[in-house]
Image (tube, rainbow, N blue to C red; front, side):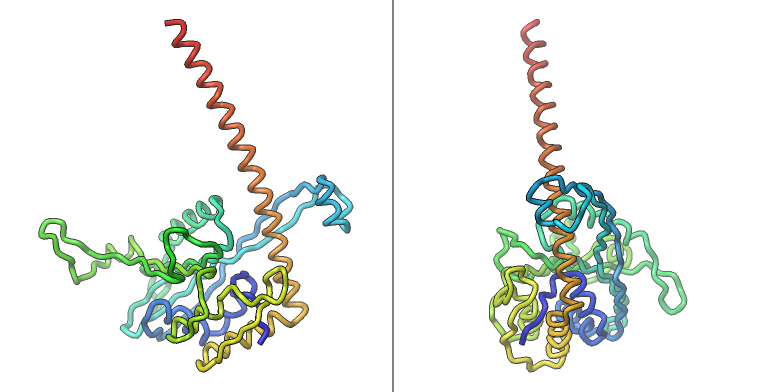
Length: 288
């Protein structure tokens, strides 16, 4: 079956709009049944002016007459409010990070800080919910070879050198567990419930050079995986849906190139300032 690559925001959004899929995705990673779930994609618009004066860029964007062109790009961060089988309410933040970019890292740190300030309405009352984060990475962490990890907290009594089995509401709302999925490390293993979820994100068997669509070869013996692949099949074969993916891919390629260029200029200016300071220090030392 041909399916769309779910690491694109527009594709992931379409998939998570299905409540059964969202419940399966989050519940499988958290390893606990989800009683209720509400997913709210948060849209962020980026407005930027890009320079197409480079001859190669002009050729690539030959339909654009002006040398400078303003585009608007939106990205999505996913927030899910869940209620577990034990009756606990939690807020789950899902971040898809396709490339290792320092700017995006700082952006999400700021975004996470904002989420800690927000209140939710639960049963008619304003409450601050514990936060869980899920990171889907389109690049490899060299130190971690497994495709999926959980970074969890433990309460340690530093006086008695023991691990506490209790939880504090205060601590739970100021700290959080995290889950990290490295899609490039997913293999063709297909045994557990988690394996079957991850198989959808496996970055192999692409049928196009852009890595937008791929062949899904596993037997879908779980209803939730069948629903996921049906949704992804439509996204990967419908011309209008596929165009949305291509637009997202090209827009972020352009933005990343712009940020890389700005970062190089910033580092160059920083090195020049360091050189000037070093020269001044040598001159001051010579006058002593």
